[in-house]
Length: 313
Length: 313
Image 1 (tube, chains in turn red, brown):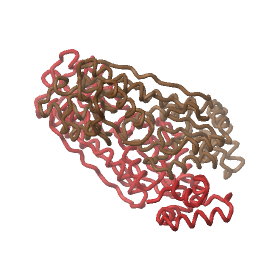
Image 2: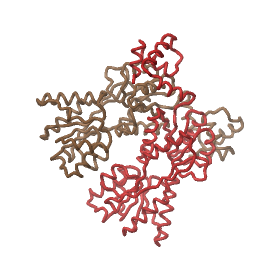
Image 3: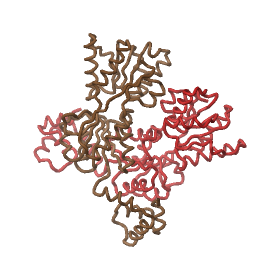
Image 4: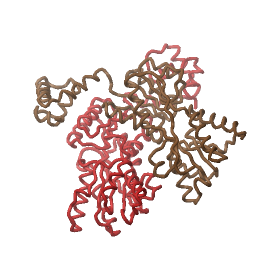
C-alpha cells in the first residue's frame, strides 16, 4: 500500500501537507488539497481515509486509570490494553493515580468533559458510588469485582483463588504459611485477607501479623521477605517470587523443603525459574477490557485462575 | 493532610462539586464554591490548589511516541517516563506507532495543535527533517542519536556498544558470532549492522546473512533462534536471551561451551539467570527523557553501556 511519502511525492507537496489533508486541517490551499486527493485516489488510499472519517466527532483517546504502570501486575494489564489500542489506532491517556482519590476524580472528569471517549479502570480506591455517578457520561469498565454495580467489569475472585492456593499448600503438608501483598488496603487485599483468616479459623490456627508482608511489588522485594523466615509463602507476584527464589539460592536455602513458594500471574520468569504459580492472563484481560469498553458491552465477567504445578512446592 | 472527601463533608457538598472547584469547572453555584474554598482553607488544602494553578493554561498531557509498549525494551523506557509523570501529576498520551509514518505524524500534529504540552519520541521511522519541522511548536526529545539536529536527545551509540560486545566475545575465543535484532530497518539496527560488518572485515571474515536474526523481541523468540545452531550470539534483549537460555537447558546444550550468549539491557531476568549482559539503564533513561523535555533543556546526551560479566560467555 502507498504510504504518506508516496502520496506527497506524487502530488508534488510536502508530507506535512498530506498529513494536514488527512487530518482535515484548514490551512491547505485548494489546489494542493486537490492534488493530494488525486494522488490518494491514484494510489487507492481511500481505505485509510475512511478510518479517519469513522472516528470523526470522537477524541480517539481512551483513558486508562492505573495506580502506576511500574507495578508489574498493572504493567501487564496496560500492555494488553495497548495492544488492542494499537490495532484500532486509538491513543491511550494514562492517568496514574498512585491510589489518590483526587487523581481518580480527574480521570472521571475527563470522561465527563469528553476529553476521552471511554475509561478503563485498572484499580481504584474511590467508592463505587462515585464511579457510578460518572458512568452516565461514557463507557467505563473496571478490572475489579463490580457485581451489583452499574459499571461493567472483568474481575478475579481473589477470595476463591487465595483459598485454593492455601488449600493446595496445606495439602502438600506445609504449615506456617505467610503471604505477600502489594498493599494493605483495597478490595483485592481485603478479599485475600478474608480468605487467609477463614482458612486459619478452619485449621484451628490463630492469625499472626508477622506472617503478612505488605508492599511486596518488585523483584528486589524478595530480599527483605526472605529474612523473615517462613516455611511457606503465598506470593501475589511472580516478580517478587523470583526475587525470593534468587535470595534463597544465594543463601543455600532449599526450595521447597525449607521454603515452599506458590505465586500468582505466570509471567515468563515463573516458567524459566520453575515457580509453581496460579496463571492469571493479565495481558489477555487488558485486551478484553479494551474490547468490551469499546463495544459498550455491559456485564460482569469472572476470570478463573489456574494452578500450574512446577518445582517450588 | 485532608483529602477531597473530608473537604466535601466539611463543606456539605458532594465530592464531585469539590472536584469541580479544584478543576475550575464553571457549573458550580457561588455559595457552594465559597463553602468548598472555606473548607479547603480550614483544612490547609491550599498547596494542592497551587499545584493546579501552576499548570493552568497547559493541557497537563505529555505525548509519548513509541512503536509499541509491548516490546520489553520500550516498555522499560515508558516505565521510567511514567514514574516521573506520576510524581509531577502529568498524564501521558501514549501514541503507539507500530513504526507507521502516518501515526508518527499524528503525534507531531498533536504537539502542533497544542493537544499535548511536549513530545517524547522513544523511537521513530520518520525523517529527522519532518521532526525538526514540528520542533518549533513545542519541546521534543528523542531517545535516538540526534547529533547535528535541532532536537534534544538522549541516545546510545549502538555502533560502539556492538563493537565492544563483538570484541569481548572474540577475545574469549568465540567465532561464528550471530546476532539478534528486533527489526531490520531503523537507525539502531543500521548502526549495529555496520559494527558487525566492520568487525568481520577486520577479522578477515565474510558476512553470512544466516547469522542475523530479525524480529527477536520476546522471551518466546528464543526457541526458533536456538534451532539455527550458532556458537555464539549477541542478543539485543535480555528477554530473548532468557528464552534462548531456557531452550538450551531443555535441550542440554551447554552454555557457554556450546553456545555463548551476550545480551543487552540488564533486566532482573538477566541477573537471576546469570546472563552476561551490557547494562543499559532504560528506566532511568525514561526518567531523564521526561525531566529534560519538561525543563526544555536542549542538548544531546550519550548514555554509555556497561559490561556485566556473568556466566554465559
